[in-house]
Image (cartoon, rainbow, N blue to C red; front, side):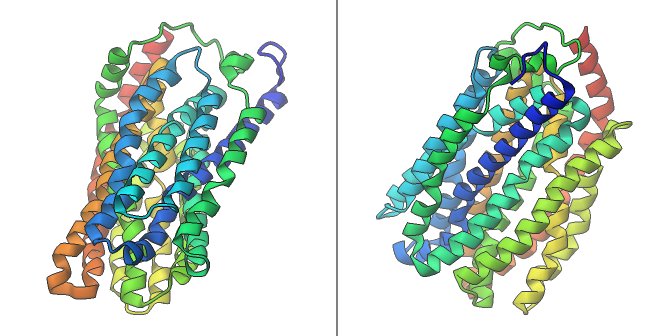
Length: 438
Protein backbone atom coordinates (compact mmCIF):
# COMPACT_ATOMS: atom_id res chain seq x y z
CA UNK A 1 0.00 0.00 0.00
CA UNK A 2 1.13 3.54 -0.66
CA UNK A 3 2.24 5.79 2.12
CA UNK A 4 0.24 8.75 3.36
CA UNK A 5 2.39 11.10 1.31
CA UNK A 6 2.69 9.08 -1.89
CA UNK A 7 -0.82 7.60 -2.18
CA UNK A 8 -2.58 8.72 -5.37
CA UNK A 9 -6.38 9.19 -5.51
CA UNK A 10 -6.67 5.95 -7.52
CA UNK A 11 -4.62 4.02 -4.94
CA UNK A 12 -6.74 5.44 -2.16
CA UNK A 13 -9.97 4.35 -3.90
CA UNK A 14 -8.49 0.89 -4.45
CA UNK A 15 -7.61 0.69 -0.74
CA UNK A 16 -11.12 1.80 0.13
CA UNK A 17 -12.68 -0.81 -2.16
CA UNK A 18 -10.48 -3.58 -0.81
CA UNK A 19 -11.42 -2.65 2.74
CA UNK A 20 -15.16 -2.46 2.01
CA UNK A 21 -15.34 -5.73 0.08
CA UNK A 22 -13.32 -7.58 2.70
CA UNK A 23 -15.40 -6.20 5.56
CA UNK A 24 -18.57 -7.09 3.66
CA UNK A 25 -17.47 -10.73 3.41
CA UNK A 26 -16.58 -10.73 7.12
CA UNK A 27 -20.02 -9.35 8.01
CA UNK A 28 -21.68 -11.95 5.78
CA UNK A 29 -19.97 -14.63 7.85
CA UNK A 30 -20.94 -12.74 10.99
CA UNK A 31 -24.63 -12.93 10.16
CA UNK A 32 -24.41 -16.38 8.60
CA UNK A 33 -23.10 -17.76 11.87
CA UNK A 34 -25.48 -15.62 13.92
CA UNK A 35 -28.67 -16.26 11.97
CA UNK A 36 -28.39 -19.90 10.91
CA UNK A 37 -29.87 -20.77 14.29
CA UNK A 38 -33.09 -19.08 13.12
CA UNK A 39 -33.83 -21.68 10.45
CA UNK A 40 -32.55 -24.48 12.70
CA UNK A 41 -34.76 -23.42 15.62
CA UNK A 42 -37.66 -25.78 14.93
CA UNK A 43 -35.48 -28.93 14.38
CA UNK A 44 -33.52 -28.04 17.55
CA UNK A 45 -36.77 -27.61 19.48
CA UNK A 46 -37.98 -31.06 18.44
CA UNK A 47 -34.66 -32.79 19.08
CA UNK A 48 -33.92 -31.25 22.50
CA UNK A 49 -37.54 -30.86 23.62
CA UNK A 50 -37.44 -27.10 24.15
CA UNK A 51 -40.31 -24.71 24.85
CA UNK A 52 -40.86 -21.62 22.70
CA UNK A 53 -39.54 -19.49 25.57
CA UNK A 54 -36.31 -21.54 25.69
CA UNK A 55 -36.09 -21.24 21.91
CA UNK A 56 -36.34 -17.47 22.17
CA UNK A 57 -33.73 -17.39 24.94
CA UNK A 58 -31.30 -19.53 22.93
CA UNK A 59 -31.74 -17.62 19.65
CA UNK A 60 -31.71 -14.17 21.25
CA UNK A 61 -30.73 -13.25 24.79
CA UNK A 62 -27.94 -15.83 25.24
CA UNK A 63 -26.12 -14.31 22.29
CA UNK A 64 -27.09 -10.68 22.69
CA UNK A 65 -26.30 -10.15 26.37
CA UNK A 66 -22.56 -10.74 26.03
CA UNK A 67 -22.43 -9.29 22.52
CA UNK A 68 -23.91 -6.01 23.73
CA UNK A 69 -22.04 -5.74 27.05
CA UNK A 70 -18.62 -6.43 25.56
CA UNK A 71 -19.13 -3.89 22.78
CA UNK A 72 -18.37 -0.86 24.96
CA UNK A 73 -14.96 -1.96 26.38
CA UNK A 74 -14.01 -3.20 22.92
CA UNK A 75 -14.97 0.21 21.52
CA UNK A 76 -12.63 1.89 23.99
CA UNK A 77 -9.82 -0.31 22.71
CA UNK A 78 -10.76 0.52 19.10
CA UNK A 79 -10.70 4.28 19.83
CA UNK A 80 -7.10 4.06 21.08
CA UNK A 81 -4.76 5.49 18.41
CA UNK A 82 -2.40 2.53 18.74
CA UNK A 83 -5.02 -0.26 18.44
CA UNK A 84 -4.93 -2.72 15.54
CA UNK A 85 -8.52 -2.97 14.35
CA UNK A 86 -7.73 -5.49 11.61
CA UNK A 87 -6.13 -7.81 14.16
CA UNK A 88 -9.15 -7.48 16.43
CA UNK A 89 -11.52 -8.43 13.61
CA UNK A 90 -9.37 -11.44 12.70
CA UNK A 91 -9.24 -12.80 16.26
CA UNK A 92 -12.96 -12.19 16.73
CA UNK A 93 -13.72 -14.09 13.52
CA UNK A 94 -11.77 -17.15 14.70
CA UNK A 95 -13.60 -17.12 18.04
CA UNK A 96 -17.17 -16.78 16.75
CA UNK A 97 -16.62 -19.32 13.96
CA UNK A 98 -15.23 -21.88 16.38
CA UNK A 99 -18.09 -21.40 18.82
CA UNK A 100 -20.62 -21.77 15.99
CA UNK A 101 -19.12 -25.14 15.19
CA UNK A 102 -19.35 -26.11 18.87
CA UNK A 103 -23.12 -25.46 18.79
CA UNK A 104 -23.37 -28.62 16.71
CA UNK A 105 -21.82 -30.67 19.52
CA UNK A 106 -24.30 -29.53 22.21
CA UNK A 107 -26.19 -32.38 23.88
CA UNK A 108 -28.64 -30.31 25.92
CA UNK A 109 -30.09 -26.83 26.30
CA UNK A 110 -27.40 -25.60 28.73
CA UNK A 111 -24.53 -26.58 26.45
CA UNK A 112 -26.19 -24.97 23.45
CA UNK A 113 -26.82 -21.83 25.48
CA UNK A 114 -23.13 -21.59 26.45
CA UNK A 115 -22.01 -22.09 22.86
CA UNK A 116 -24.31 -19.29 21.73
CA UNK A 117 -22.82 -17.06 24.44
CA UNK A 118 -19.41 -17.81 22.92
CA UNK A 119 -20.63 -16.76 19.48
CA UNK A 120 -21.81 -13.47 20.99
CA UNK A 121 -18.46 -12.87 22.69
CA UNK A 122 -16.61 -13.39 19.40
CA UNK A 123 -18.90 -11.26 17.26
CA UNK A 124 -18.73 -8.32 19.69
CA UNK A 125 -15.37 -7.32 18.23
CA UNK A 126 -16.51 -6.95 14.62
CA UNK A 127 -18.79 -3.96 14.02
CA UNK A 128 -17.19 -1.24 16.24
CA UNK A 129 -13.82 -1.93 14.59
CA UNK A 130 -15.33 -2.14 11.10
CA UNK A 131 -17.24 1.14 11.40
CA UNK A 132 -14.16 2.87 12.79
CA UNK A 133 -12.09 1.64 9.82
CA UNK A 134 -14.74 2.81 7.35
CA UNK A 135 -14.93 6.25 8.97
CA UNK A 136 -11.15 6.62 8.61
CA UNK A 137 -11.04 5.45 4.98
CA UNK A 138 -14.21 6.92 3.44
CA UNK A 139 -15.00 10.66 3.05
CA UNK A 140 -18.05 11.93 4.90
CA UNK A 141 -20.06 12.56 1.72
CA UNK A 142 -19.98 8.81 0.91
CA UNK A 143 -20.06 7.43 4.43
CA UNK A 144 -23.75 6.48 4.59
CA UNK A 145 -23.38 4.47 1.39
CA UNK A 146 -20.15 2.85 2.62
CA UNK A 147 -21.67 1.82 5.96
CA UNK A 148 -24.77 0.59 4.13
CA UNK A 149 -22.51 -1.46 1.83
CA UNK A 150 -20.99 -3.09 4.90
CA UNK A 151 -24.49 -3.53 6.30
CA UNK A 152 -25.49 -5.58 3.24
CA UNK A 153 -23.77 -8.41 5.07
CA UNK A 154 -26.95 -8.66 7.18
CA UNK A 155 -29.35 -9.71 4.40
CA UNK A 156 -26.74 -11.68 2.48
CA UNK A 157 -25.61 -13.57 5.59
CA UNK A 158 -29.23 -14.11 6.62
CA UNK A 159 -30.08 -15.38 3.13
CA UNK A 160 -27.19 -17.84 3.16
CA UNK A 161 -27.95 -18.87 6.73
CA UNK A 162 -31.59 -19.58 5.86
CA UNK A 163 -30.99 -21.36 2.55
CA UNK A 164 -27.93 -23.36 3.63
CA UNK A 165 -29.31 -24.03 7.10
CA UNK A 166 -32.63 -25.30 5.81
CA UNK A 167 -31.03 -27.60 3.26
CA UNK A 168 -28.43 -28.92 5.70
CA UNK A 169 -31.03 -29.44 8.44
CA UNK A 170 -33.11 -31.65 6.15
CA UNK A 171 -30.16 -33.54 4.65
CA UNK A 172 -27.48 -33.97 7.32
CA UNK A 173 -29.18 -32.59 10.44
CA UNK A 174 -28.88 -29.40 12.46
CA UNK A 175 -25.70 -30.49 14.22
CA UNK A 176 -23.73 -30.92 11.00
CA UNK A 177 -25.17 -27.62 9.74
CA UNK A 178 -23.42 -25.73 12.55
CA UNK A 179 -20.14 -27.49 11.82
CA UNK A 180 -20.31 -26.79 8.08
CA UNK A 181 -20.90 -23.05 8.41
CA UNK A 182 -18.52 -22.48 11.32
CA UNK A 183 -15.31 -24.00 9.95
CA UNK A 184 -14.65 -21.68 6.93
CA UNK A 185 -14.48 -18.63 9.19
CA UNK A 186 -11.05 -19.62 10.43
CA UNK A 187 -9.65 -19.52 6.88
CA UNK A 188 -11.31 -16.15 6.29
CA UNK A 189 -9.67 -14.78 9.44
CA UNK A 190 -6.24 -15.66 8.06
CA UNK A 191 -7.11 -13.92 4.79
CA UNK A 192 -8.21 -10.75 6.62
CA UNK A 193 -5.02 -10.73 8.69
CA UNK A 194 -2.82 -11.06 5.58
CA UNK A 195 -4.65 -8.80 3.11
CA UNK A 196 -5.72 -5.77 5.18
CA UNK A 197 -3.69 -3.17 7.02
CA UNK A 198 -5.07 -0.85 9.65
CA UNK A 199 -4.63 2.68 8.21
CA UNK A 200 -3.28 3.78 11.58
CA UNK A 201 -0.40 1.38 11.02
CA UNK A 202 -0.04 1.95 7.28
CA UNK A 203 -0.24 5.76 7.33
CA UNK A 204 -3.36 5.91 5.16
CA UNK A 205 -5.76 7.55 7.60
CA UNK A 206 -3.94 10.87 7.37
CA UNK A 207 -3.84 10.69 3.57
CA UNK A 208 -7.58 10.22 3.36
CA UNK A 209 -8.52 13.14 5.56
CA UNK A 210 -8.31 16.76 4.56
CA UNK A 211 -6.46 18.89 7.10
CA UNK A 212 -7.53 16.60 9.94
CA UNK A 213 -6.69 18.26 13.26
CA UNK A 214 -4.74 16.52 15.97
CA UNK A 215 -7.21 15.89 18.79
CA UNK A 216 -6.67 14.56 22.30
CA UNK A 217 -8.01 11.13 23.18
CA UNK A 218 -11.17 11.13 25.27
CA UNK A 219 -11.46 9.09 28.43
CA UNK A 220 -14.08 6.34 28.49
CA UNK A 221 -16.28 8.48 30.74
CA UNK A 222 -15.93 11.54 28.50
CA UNK A 223 -16.60 9.55 25.31
CA UNK A 224 -19.70 7.94 26.80
CA UNK A 225 -20.88 11.31 28.12
CA UNK A 226 -20.48 12.84 24.66
CA UNK A 227 -22.48 10.04 23.04
CA UNK A 228 -25.26 10.11 25.63
CA UNK A 229 -25.28 13.91 25.69
CA UNK A 230 -26.68 14.00 22.15
CA UNK A 231 -30.47 14.11 22.18
CA UNK A 232 -30.55 13.12 18.51
CA UNK A 233 -28.34 10.11 19.22
CA UNK A 234 -30.58 8.94 22.07
CA UNK A 235 -33.68 9.16 19.85
CA UNK A 236 -31.76 7.34 17.13
CA UNK A 237 -30.67 4.62 19.57
CA UNK A 238 -34.27 4.07 20.71
CA UNK A 239 -35.40 3.84 17.07
CA UNK A 240 -32.59 1.45 16.16
CA UNK A 241 -33.24 -0.70 19.22
CA UNK A 242 -36.94 -0.99 18.41
CA UNK A 243 -36.21 -1.82 14.77
CA UNK A 244 -33.87 -4.58 15.91
CA UNK A 245 -36.43 -5.83 18.44
CA UNK A 246 -38.98 -6.29 15.68
CA UNK A 247 -36.50 -7.44 13.04
CA UNK A 248 -34.86 -10.18 15.12
CA UNK A 249 -38.18 -11.26 16.59
CA UNK A 250 -39.81 -11.53 13.18
CA UNK A 251 -36.68 -13.13 11.73
CA UNK A 252 -36.86 -16.11 14.09
CA UNK A 253 -40.61 -16.49 14.30
CA UNK A 254 -41.47 -15.88 10.64
CA UNK A 255 -39.48 -19.00 9.82
CA UNK A 256 -41.30 -20.92 12.56
CA UNK A 257 -44.63 -19.48 11.34
CA UNK A 258 -44.18 -20.84 7.82
CA UNK A 259 -43.35 -24.27 9.20
CA UNK A 260 -46.24 -24.41 11.69
CA UNK A 261 -49.01 -22.48 9.94
CA UNK A 262 -48.21 -23.37 6.33
CA UNK A 263 -46.61 -26.80 6.84
CA UNK A 264 -43.36 -26.05 4.98
CA UNK A 265 -40.15 -27.97 5.58
CA UNK A 266 -36.94 -26.33 6.80
CA UNK A 267 -35.53 -26.59 3.27
CA UNK A 268 -38.55 -24.85 1.75
CA UNK A 269 -38.57 -22.07 4.33
CA UNK A 270 -34.82 -21.61 4.08
CA UNK A 271 -34.91 -21.38 0.29
CA UNK A 272 -37.95 -19.16 -0.20
CA UNK A 273 -37.70 -16.99 2.90
CA UNK A 274 -33.94 -16.70 2.36
CA UNK A 275 -34.39 -15.52 -1.22
CA UNK A 276 -37.34 -13.20 -0.65
CA UNK A 277 -36.17 -11.64 2.61
CA UNK A 278 -32.48 -11.72 1.70
CA UNK A 279 -32.81 -10.06 -1.71
CA UNK A 280 -35.31 -7.45 -0.53
CA UNK A 281 -33.17 -6.72 2.54
CA UNK A 282 -30.06 -6.44 0.36
CA UNK A 283 -31.58 -3.83 -1.93
CA UNK A 284 -33.24 -2.03 0.96
CA UNK A 285 -29.97 -1.71 2.89
CA UNK A 286 -28.14 -0.39 -0.17
CA UNK A 287 -30.97 2.00 -1.08
CA UNK A 288 -31.10 3.39 2.47
CA UNK A 289 -27.45 4.44 2.30
CA UNK A 290 -27.81 5.91 -1.18
CA UNK A 291 -30.92 7.89 -0.27
CA UNK A 292 -29.26 9.24 2.89
CA UNK A 293 -26.24 10.47 0.94
CA UNK A 294 -28.37 11.81 -1.92
CA UNK A 295 -31.00 13.72 0.07
CA UNK A 296 -29.09 14.33 3.29
CA UNK A 297 -26.29 16.16 1.52
CA UNK A 298 -27.99 19.56 1.70
CA UNK A 299 -30.39 18.93 4.58
CA UNK A 300 -29.29 16.42 7.23
CA UNK A 301 -32.88 15.81 8.30
CA UNK A 302 -33.43 13.77 5.17
CA UNK A 303 -30.79 11.23 6.19
CA UNK A 304 -33.59 9.67 8.25
CA UNK A 305 -36.60 10.39 6.02
CA UNK A 306 -36.48 7.05 4.21
CA UNK A 307 -36.37 4.90 7.39
CA UNK A 308 -39.25 6.85 8.97
CA UNK A 309 -41.53 6.83 5.93
CA UNK A 310 -40.58 3.28 4.98
CA UNK A 311 -41.66 1.82 8.29
CA UNK A 312 -45.00 3.58 8.19
CA UNK A 313 -45.71 2.20 4.71
CA UNK A 314 -44.51 -1.31 5.66
CA UNK A 315 -46.91 -1.88 8.59
CA UNK A 316 -50.15 -2.64 6.68
CA UNK A 317 -48.28 -4.69 4.09
CA UNK A 318 -46.81 -6.93 6.80
CA UNK A 319 -50.22 -7.41 8.40
CA UNK A 320 -51.63 -8.48 5.05
CA UNK A 321 -48.73 -10.90 4.46
CA UNK A 322 -49.35 -12.66 7.78
CA UNK A 323 -53.11 -12.81 7.13
CA UNK A 324 -53.24 -14.77 3.86
CA UNK A 325 -53.61 -18.55 3.79
CA UNK A 326 -51.51 -19.24 0.67
CA UNK A 327 -47.82 -19.47 1.59
CA UNK A 328 -46.58 -18.33 -1.83
CA UNK A 329 -48.72 -15.20 -1.68
CA UNK A 330 -47.53 -14.58 1.89
CA UNK A 331 -43.89 -14.85 0.80
CA UNK A 332 -44.44 -12.47 -2.11
CA UNK A 333 -46.19 -9.93 0.11
CA UNK A 334 -43.18 -9.86 2.46
CA UNK A 335 -40.83 -8.52 -0.25
CA UNK A 336 -41.75 -4.81 -0.26
CA UNK A 337 -42.15 -4.30 3.53
CA UNK A 338 -38.82 -6.07 4.11
CA UNK A 339 -37.22 -3.69 1.60
CA UNK A 340 -38.76 -0.70 3.39
CA UNK A 341 -37.77 -1.91 6.86
CA UNK A 342 -34.15 -2.37 5.70
CA UNK A 343 -33.60 1.28 4.75
CA UNK A 344 -32.46 2.25 8.25
CA UNK A 345 -28.98 0.67 8.62
CA UNK A 346 -26.71 3.04 6.67
CA UNK A 347 -28.47 6.27 7.70
CA UNK A 348 -28.63 5.25 11.38
CA UNK A 349 -24.97 4.37 11.81
CA UNK A 350 -23.69 7.18 9.56
CA UNK A 351 -25.71 9.73 11.53
CA UNK A 352 -24.36 8.30 14.78
CA UNK A 353 -20.80 8.84 13.52
CA UNK A 354 -21.54 12.49 12.69
CA UNK A 355 -23.14 13.27 16.06
CA UNK A 356 -19.85 12.79 17.95
CA UNK A 357 -16.22 13.79 17.51
CA UNK A 358 -13.86 11.34 15.74
CA UNK A 359 -12.33 10.08 19.00
CA UNK A 360 -15.77 8.90 20.20
CA UNK A 361 -16.92 7.19 16.98
CA UNK A 362 -16.29 3.62 18.08
CA UNK A 363 -18.08 4.37 21.35
CA UNK A 364 -21.06 5.71 19.38
CA UNK A 365 -21.17 2.52 17.33
CA UNK A 366 -20.83 0.38 20.45
CA UNK A 367 -23.71 2.14 22.22
CA UNK A 368 -25.88 1.78 19.12
CA UNK A 369 -24.93 -1.90 18.85
CA UNK A 370 -25.68 -2.27 22.57
CA UNK A 371 -29.18 -0.83 22.10
CA UNK A 372 -29.88 -2.85 18.99
CA UNK A 373 -28.67 -6.15 20.34
CA UNK A 374 -29.66 -6.08 23.99
CA UNK A 375 -33.11 -4.69 23.22
CA UNK A 376 -33.44 -6.20 19.76
CA UNK A 377 -31.72 -9.55 19.55
CA UNK A 378 -31.77 -10.13 23.29
CA UNK A 379 -35.43 -9.42 23.94
CA UNK A 380 -37.11 -9.69 20.52
CA UNK A 381 -37.00 -13.47 19.92
CA UNK A 382 -37.49 -14.14 23.66
CA UNK A 383 -40.53 -11.84 23.94
CA UNK A 384 -42.07 -13.26 20.76
CA UNK A 385 -41.57 -16.78 22.12
CA UNK A 386 -43.13 -15.89 25.47
CA UNK A 387 -46.12 -14.32 23.73
CA UNK A 388 -46.50 -17.38 21.52
CA UNK A 389 -46.59 -19.62 24.60
CA UNK A 390 -49.13 -17.27 26.22
CA UNK A 391 -51.42 -17.32 23.16
CA UNK A 392 -51.32 -21.10 22.69
CA UNK A 393 -54.35 -21.86 24.91
CA UNK A 394 -56.43 -19.57 22.65
CA UNK A 395 -54.74 -19.85 19.26
CA UNK A 396 -53.16 -23.30 19.30
CA UNK A 397 -50.71 -23.77 16.43
CA UNK A 398 -51.65 -20.30 15.12
CA UNK A 399 -50.14 -18.56 18.17
CA UNK A 400 -47.09 -17.42 16.22
CA UNK A 401 -49.33 -15.82 13.57
CA UNK A 402 -51.09 -13.82 16.31
CA UNK A 403 -47.75 -12.54 17.59
CA UNK A 404 -46.72 -11.47 14.08
CA UNK A 405 -49.99 -9.57 13.61
CA UNK A 406 -49.02 -7.33 16.51
CA UNK A 407 -45.40 -7.02 15.36
CA UNK A 408 -46.54 -5.69 11.98
CA UNK A 409 -48.19 -2.60 13.51
CA UNK A 410 -45.47 -2.01 16.12
CA UNK A 411 -43.24 -0.79 13.27
CA UNK A 412 -44.99 2.56 13.58
CA UNK A 413 -43.21 3.19 16.90
CA UNK A 414 -39.59 3.31 15.61
CA UNK A 415 -40.84 5.38 12.64
CA UNK A 416 -41.91 8.05 15.14
CA UNK A 417 -38.48 8.09 16.83
CA UNK A 418 -36.64 8.31 13.49
CA UNK A 419 -38.77 11.35 12.64
CA UNK A 420 -38.08 12.97 16.01
CA UNK A 421 -34.33 12.36 15.67
CA UNK A 422 -34.29 13.84 12.17
CA UNK A 423 -35.54 17.18 13.46
CA UNK A 424 -32.35 17.63 15.52
CA UNK A 425 -29.73 16.49 13.02
CA UNK A 426 -28.91 19.81 11.34
CA UNK A 427 -28.36 21.69 14.60
CA UNK A 428 -26.41 18.97 16.41
CA UNK A 429 -24.21 17.96 13.46
CA UNK A 430 -23.31 21.57 12.70
CA UNK A 431 -22.37 22.17 16.34
CA UNK A 432 -20.30 18.99 16.50
CA UNK A 433 -18.46 19.79 13.25
CA UNK A 434 -17.59 23.26 14.58
CA UNK A 435 -16.32 21.76 17.85
CA UNK A 436 -14.17 19.24 15.98
CA UNK A 437 -12.60 21.85 13.70
CA UNK A 438 -12.21 24.32 16.53
